[in-house]
Image (cartoon, rainbow, N blue to C red; front, side):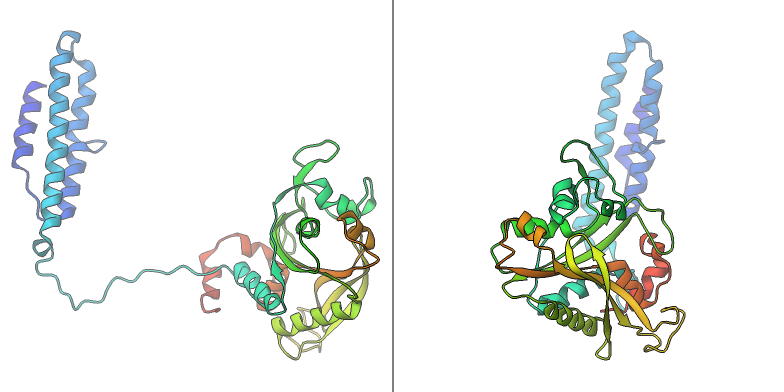
Length: 341
């Protein structure tokens, strides 16, 4: 082993390099996982106990000399860039590299937010891990209420006020009503979770944007106007809307919102299943019980709320038929949105 160490020390002293790539090759040859110095350290395990001190010191000197020499060669090349670029053709085109792009869900989310910002809605956010009160109790879902079965929930802990993954961003509306001064005009974008089987039209993780407007003398006509303005901004000026009666525990009256199909222009196609209409969101007037639960006088104030799935809007906007494509990170699919501004 002594002869090997001395031979390597002499070899290190003679080392030269002209390029940084050559320096890296020297480093791998000496100090890499299978390098000459590394192999000697492995052989050191077999050295007799009485010789370990001597050989150990020599090995440490060898490793230090190797590292110092490599650093010396690297500095010399970096301090003399002209030598490293001798003969380089500066007229050659540069190497191409791929730029990243925005995800279609991010594009859609930002567009929705931008539209409502123009209407004076502020942005509000809240935690994804919530308690039962903010997700259900304050939104008129009493314990054992059958409406809780509408949303299969991921519970994290049990107890009087269990912790769970929020099933909708309405919990952000509750927190906003608890702490914000009136009037309130907000949108609440965020990720939500429901225990559903994953398919082309459903997923256990998806994104929502919900809106809330509370002030004096807010009416259902104000709600319809807000929905109509959003639909025309998102899908085009010729877009029509219709509201169908529905049920949500936290709004009364409640409605589902449809827009005229932007593919067939209302004539009927496979996207709208021949009806000429596409569902985009749910909405309604905030139930007085919800206002009172957050400390707002329902006799003096009223309001409306709406909520939509970002994936749903993106599917309608770009005619994507399989929800799972948004979660697979397939570069071929994502590249289709590179030109979207």
